[in-house]
Picture 1: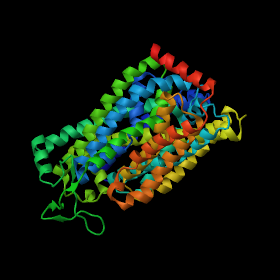
Picture 2: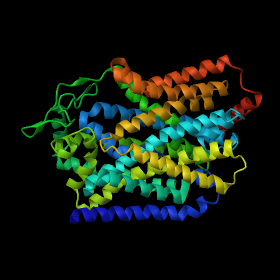
Picture 3: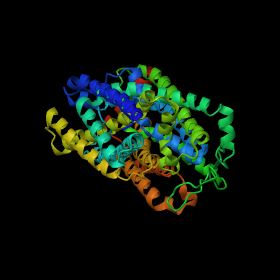
Picture 4: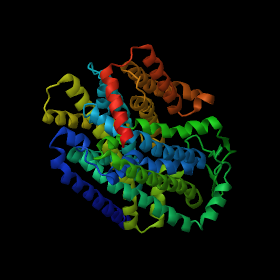
Length: 524
């Protein structure tokens, strides 16, 4: 191993040691009860709630996937995605956070998303809880695999070891950390990791601008590529049969700009709709200690999100100016290493290690959330809620850790392909949660007439349409080439309304709870 690689490794090991210490610090409190382990006893302050929500939401996708898309095919796909996410972040904190915090407490003191849906509709048969928990297991397994792909790409690029071995090492570290501290440790470390992520992005953006000769030079280079800076067009790298971009006379080759029509823009903006169904974000709303602190959290989260997304997109654009012919970046999968390569080229090795801890931070902050929520969905909602209703807290937490391990193993298997594209994996899981839970969350919080059967039909139709559109319709291209979240979200919304109106209205006890929450929200 080269001295520069040793310095990077030292910096990252020190970072991981700090994260482990956080887990150990919170371990005793987290293990005192399942409520503390899964929701931290509703004790999060506004800063930790906001920063941990964004860090767990964005994941390594922010530092690798998004810059990789901007580097590979230009600004349109990445920028419209970022705009949609920024708007979605603000609106979610504005309209969902306060009401969900209050409703989850009124509805049987729910501590998981399946708990909330089941309690909201007084579902004694636990049908909603079961389906919600199963969807969470499926989509968070996919999500966890994207984090493991990030670990594998990061360490294999840095140290030259095989992708598969590095991916497994990263996954094992995440598993150990999540075992230790639960939700409190996860949220506290996510706060720190959100700071590391935004600093890392900002530093590389500033240094990259200087190294490229200024923003004018970056823009000039990007304009020379057909469609690269066009919000309604897209660059098309010319690749060989292996999917590697062709380079001639020291320049990467591009074809004519592709079109990026209005419908594609709308479907890309629909990334923002996904926020209404993201369990890792919604749980932060439920966990904050006081609902009146959510206004501060909203401002913090939105500012962090806008800065981070802007920096990530611009790093991809700038990377084309600096490193357009770098061999490791000459494929859509390899392009996701642009942040790593820029960090190594711009900084001394020890500082590069600190900055690249931002990728590790993003990966850890997301994967521990995904594993913990998936484990809680089964142990709390299926094992305790259905299979063994008299289970003790100790038994629930034991089962949780077993499921956590199984989900991680399946995620590792999915992530074994080193040509996996992080952006594509995340976009599928994001659509899954957005369409399965997003419409249902909105109607649960804001429509008094919504009933259990509408909720169930909407959840199943939304989640099912994501699979059908992605696997069957999307490959046909044309109008079907749009992002699957938009049609699936719309279908789920329609189904919820239609089925709710065609089936009996909710009982008075359900509508009374709804009215209580609405009244509390208006008073504050």
